[in-house]
Length: 77
Image (cartoon, rainbow, N blue to C red; front, side, top):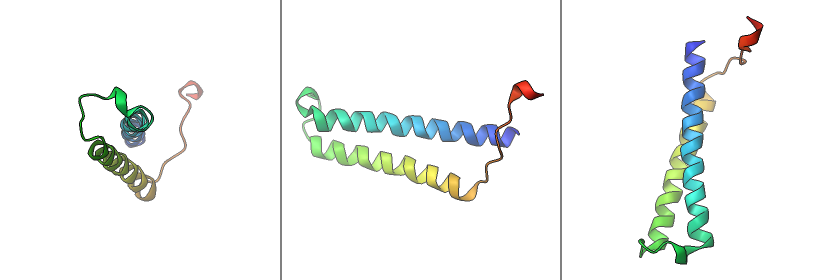
């Protein structure tokens, strides 16, 4: 049970970090003028894509190699 909670927590953390990078990417692509502190927007977009790819890769590896047990409902105990 503890291992399942840990793996699920890791997955949620990775998904959250990936989603943050996706939100940042959307801002850069939809409104690059509003991002004044970065003069090289294309390099920043590549950096964000690399981070997104890293999180997706980690999530894919977890899903491939770690079997998930069905989630238990704490109210059923």
